[in-house]
Image 1: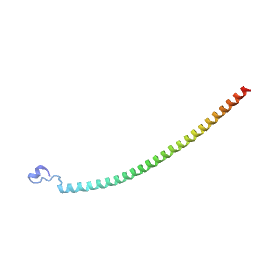
Image 2 (image 1 turned 180 degrees about the horizontal axis):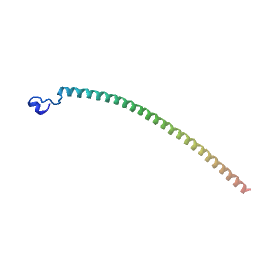
Image 3 (image 1 turned 60 degrees about the vertical axis):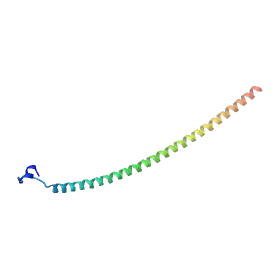
Image 4 (image 1 turned 90 degrees about the horizontal axis):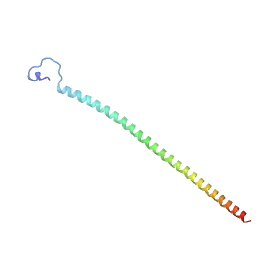
Length: 103
């Protein structure tokens, strides 16, 4: 109530009782709490979906890295094999060349 009404008689202007305001606020806060819980639940679902997507992405990236390593290992092995063949060919040419100069 207004200060003037508190010490005297009510002057017929608009007013609310504390109990009525408190009940309205309790109801409003209860509604806000329910909406907050619903939003929290939806947000938690989205967080869980993001975590699952992140895990899938991480697993895929790991698989790609493994495949890259396998391919480079194959290339490395092929290059080493080719190096050995070329070195052997050079050695063979050297032997033939040296033998032909002897005769």
